[in-house]
Image (cartoon, rainbow, N blue to C red; front, side, top):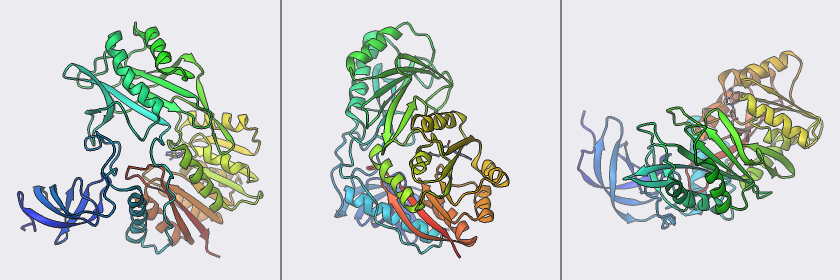
Length: 454
Ligand code: SAH
């Protein structure tokens, strides 16, 4: 069968959508072509580079009619860096596109006709990240640091990243000099040699406390004390310097061993008026300003009067649980990582909550067990990873029928799939509110409110 386009064709196309990588999508007689740099609504001249059976790739030659939302990307490594995908789309354009993406998922995947509200965005969608994970390496004998290129482990070398904190920029830039001065070798993936793999910088928005984590291949390295002194010099505001050891050949940033080299073991932050202690490896939302918006939305949809028992599935370090605990009779949180449950318990204690209970384990096993033990919920909150809720958990919801479900999702596709299952089992989705947690990227968070049909 011949395809509607051939390699090396030069054609004019209309861009209809964006992929998760931020590439424009055009359809030629139904055959999708992916075009890096093109935006929805544009007419573009493209050169077909590669054709596969069900899709192909083309290069943008010229934008004939630009999108009204096209802007010049402010970052100088935007074209190479995999961190941001849509800096060439105005922020208003990003929010409109994200709303449409959620709507499309609801209609196409969920076969749902539900109100998807305009995305709640940020007033200033820059410098929002509270955590930066900076890989270092060598390129042509020169120390480089920055962020990985799209789908690659090659570093896009840069001294600034305008979605992270200015303190992280200071570290990013100065550590390059420190590595050369002290003769510390950055880690090299190919040979599994070198010492410094990543530097992770975390800043607590509410208190200003800063933790710097050096991820090294070995525990011992002779320049350690000098490195600690250098970090204190670069960033006098730092409150804790931690070392994490990772000797595996892996993409995962952190290894198992963590020790404090200087200062405190954790940094303290506030979400609303709830205090959290965050250690080097804890999962913590990266956009603190929007985290409050997201959790407030979950709280609004939960409509608590003080009489309800709430289950928070996939609770992490208990952030949503404690946010809800102020207004619930009781909150039960479950999470698969035992360390996170330890953090959740401690956070509950620090804040003086006595109406929370946390248990480690898979939500799909722990929650059915709770129901058998008579621990039932009026409201169930879920905040699963990208792959969505486990099928067994959805079945438990359908059997136990809590009156209200609040679904916090970081993936509109799995959200739509799971809402369909809950709808078929007797729930109705009242509303979906997207919240922009990740400006300049294609990531999209949304909260759905479901009620059990009477
Ligand atoms: N609600 C938290 C964390 C959300 S991230 C917050 O807002 O900070 C999703 C969490 O689900 C992660 O902490 C992950 O460890 C956890 N998780 C993944 N699979 C799980 C499962 N099967 N059961 C319980 N928790 C799980």
